[in-house]
Length: 447
Image (cartoon, rainbow, N blue to C red; front, side, top):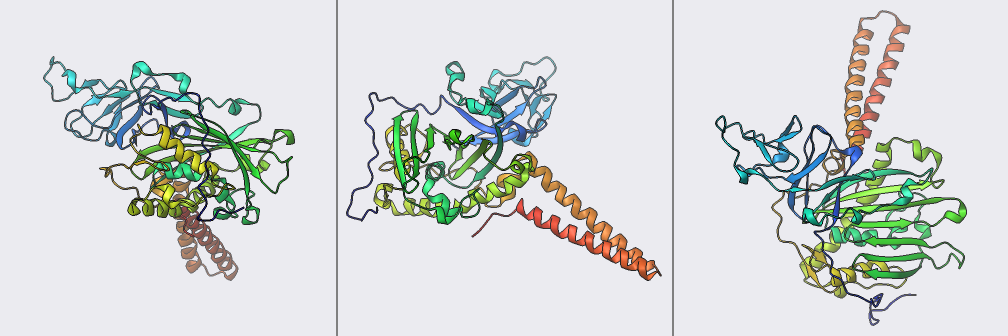
């Protein structure tokens, strides 16, 4: 079924019994996977262009404070940790995880630290392998609002976590995330088990909508009435959950995607793939960095298409309703998300709804680069270590190749020369392969 330009857009609105406002501040926001968090260094990030910094104190607890020294507004994330305290590298002022200024080198002996030297702090918890911060008032903190994914605790379930920063607006990335129809085309041969030949009309249903988000399900229209439904849930303001619903086949699996709005055209994306008897056995045991190379490519395949959409909408001055030509067999969830923003997202610092929008002002942060190294490798402990190892292997292989070449020149034995030249060539091949792998941690994928 297709829709002509004269037909009305899809209407997936569900009448709700109650209207509730969405308070974006009083929520938990994901910041980093715990396995990627370096205990010995400050960890900088932002939330809607508000600079923040994480660090772990001497007791092992993580604190989050504003990334601004109260003395001369220097970035604390450029500082260092001294006995569990965050020290500003400009003048040495030190702060604990509660934001209290505990040391000023320039004060006279016995002088009290000014009360207004303290900085704002935010509650932090470690939950299901992720560090979360509470953006709202501490007295309103509610751990019950943490998304608890019980399925991750089931026997035999494992997950692979990937983090990447993307230079795009978070609403366009979530829109992309609730769009299963693009996957066979955009990720042909890259996404696991997906080819463009599987592109087909979808049967899509929205099951519930509230200020907390919405849920739905979909399946291929050509798959038959007994085909399983894939379950989708959008949990406001940042989480998408896909459940492949394959329990009757003895399998379990899905994807969870978290989005952290860093600021204007800057979003941190956390992808958590989980499964039991779903993926090949080698998938569980492969190096984490190897899966990250593939997952980065998946996310980057969509990036420039998403950016072109956003740039056109912003420059045209049109609403998405005026731009889109949606289909009932592919775009139901896309429209539901944008309409959800129209209804509940008006208090967000920025959003792009279907008929309304609140676009962010110009960011004072440095624009995000497109290279994979700064957007992923530096954030990921596994890939950062693998990247350094490729550099070491190249240096060692080059050194061995040079040494063998020198030995070859000094040798008078023909047989020995053949051996050393062969080994030297092997070392050079290893160096080239290591360099090729290194580029996978540096360069963005382009079609």
